[in-house]
Image: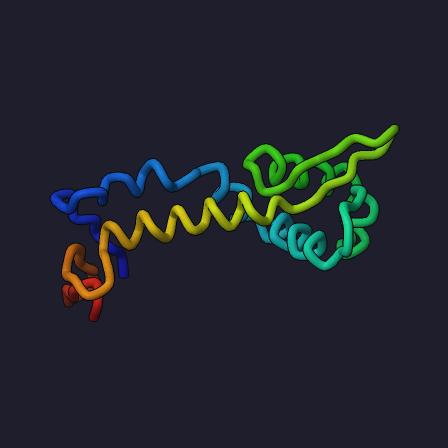
Length: 128
C-alpha cells in the first residue's frame, strides 16, 4: 500500500523537508546497516579494523561504507594520530528520525482521515 499525501493538510508538504535522501541512501545498503549495528555493540568509539571484525570484507570497503554513514550524519569520525575513530551520533540520529515521524503524523495525524492508502482494489483512510 502506498500513502498518498493530502496536499490540502497544513504541514503535510513539510514531509519533503524532513526526509533526507542521503540518510535513506546510507541505510539502504545492508552492509552499512550491519556495520552500524556492529558499532552500536562496541562500548566506545572504534577504528575501521575494530568495526570490520564483524564482516568478511576488505578494510577499504568498510572505510568507504563508514564514510557514507559519516557524510549523512549518522556517524562522527575523530582522527587520533594515524587512526580514525567512529562513533554513532545517537542524539542526532534520534532527532532526525523523530522529525520524520512528526512530519508523517502531520500529514496523517492519529484519529483523523487526512490521507488515504491506495491498495490494489481498495482505498482506506490512514487509520484503517
